[in-house]
Amino acid sequence: MKRVWPILVVDDEEVMCESMAAWLREDGYRVDTASSGQKAVEQAKVTDYAICFVDLKMPGMDGIETMMEIHRLRAEASIIIITAYATVDTAIQAMKEGAQEYIVKPCHPQEISMLVSRILKLKKLQSENVILRKKISRKYHHRDIITKNPRMEEILTLTKEIASHRSTVLICGESGTGKELVARAIHYSGDRAEKPFISVSCAALTETLLESELFGHEKGSFTGAAGQTKGKFELADGGTIFLDEIGDISPKLQADLLRVLQEKRFYRVGGTEEVSVDVRVIAATNRNLPEEVQQGRFRDDLYYRLNVIEIRLPALRERREDIPLLAEHFVEKIASELGKDISGISADALKVLIAHDWPGNVRELENVIERAIVTSHSDMLEAEDFAWLNKRPGMEQSWEVPDISLNELERRAIIAVLERKKGNVKEAAASLGIDRSTLYDKLKRYEITH
Image (tube, rainbow, N blue to C red; front, side, top):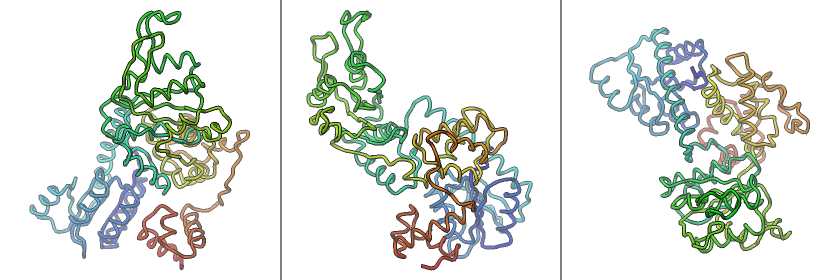
């Protein structure tokens, strides 16, 4: 059971609201409360709730309206309508508008526990099926890129805009920042989605092997060439070819690639017949290509041909607000794949992860989570599961996190950003990656004046 999935209880009766929340917290779930439909919708903008218990009769926005607004934001949320005024008509209306269940007050703790357990077991199975389908098909979309970082959100907006264009794209960023994931999102969100996506690591092969890998070869063109073989460009016809670590290719292959980009034609190794293809090229590199051009190691004409649209991915240390989101995602994904019953990751463990500098970026985070899951003897990842992380040579902690709660850490972060933005709430909200209304709620909650 994935108790890291949050639950929301919405009821204008404080006693009822807090009682139900207390029952669920006793079962180990993370539970938030809201005293009105409007507040519930604002909270749903920020948090992806797995289950929402919503009172039917509330002042202002009633339960049905609240449910519909939450579903508009979070289509996968399971909505449970609760009411003291049970009638056949209201039950039918609630189920017709999308409620998963309809229960009558007074609610019994055992009934609530069984209902939540049943819903989350189903969600776990659905989640595992989605993970397996993606693993088999390797199809990733924009919604699979987990972030609340403003820079990353700008990048996702750009990738959606260019998804159906044929222009070449150059994705720059450190190793492990997710360059291939972004490339796949571009491909599978555009009009080439049903055509092949072919990935080639340009750093993994010698010049001769890479040339054959990209363009194919004819029978007898070299020792061991027993027959004609199509290259990756030919296999990607109509779709996309992703050239990873493009900065590592030899001068000869740079010239060959330039010709393909210009003319959409090439010769197989040892061949005399031109092959024409319709392929979109997305390239990626962790090198500084302008510097490589300046040093004469990379052709300037090829660089400009590749760099029609440039995307620069930030390092994970530049988007620390995404670390908890990514960590919880990897816990769910990897625990499911390994068949381990890990229910989540503790607040202290998240502090350790946030403090780390992540030279290997998102890929390193995923590997660290996998190691912790494999070696853990508990159903919750704790700080001690990551104690080795900052003790490795050359990987000292670069950001010291004080020994305080996450709420206090958030409060201090908000105060620091407001001071930096000279009290401008709009700019502070943008910097924090949240809505202004959410920031106002947090200012009120933490009694912060600005």
